[in-house]
Length: 278
Image (cartoon, rainbow, N blue to C red):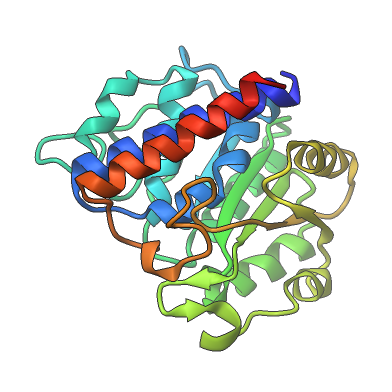
């Protein structure tokens, strides 16, 4: 896909995020929106996947370690063809398979149930090691939050991954600098994130995580890296493309009301108009 096509797909993902959390009257829009380009590139360009065969044993795997941003993952899966886009409106509703956190038993395309912060990298490392032991060619991707990496289990898993030289593992940190209690450097700073991963024998790449050109180059570099796992530190904007949500910790975990929903969708409509002019 061209960068323009990817931007259009990311816009559809963002619309699905807003539709879902508004319908649910709950959810986590801020960190879902910041990662929209990352979700989009992974599922539309990077990963070896087939929505018609979501359990293909040779597929690439994805773990959403920051499981509360499920609206972003769900919207991506729906737009990629794993299930109907209309089902996003059932987010968090009683009886819906699209609950507040990813559920691998009920949602097509979800490779790991997640939600308890800090655990996703351990699961992804296990998948990557299994691939090595079975001599499989699949790759494993895991998206972590920058606040989430304050959890100690993240660094145990990083130590393990580097020691085992899991070059089929790619960690992406959504570094939007905001967590539920405020700026991460004021809550319990994990900085410098890149140097920490380097110390655990990771190949580290810093990028603008909302720029498809930089995302593309980073994943290509990760594929070429041998004998080390890769950590992509993706510097992003929380709440991106929704004016009143951008860089605001207030929108970490709440849904827009009807008036705010209209403003958000109008913001996204304008983004779409701008793309059509390119």
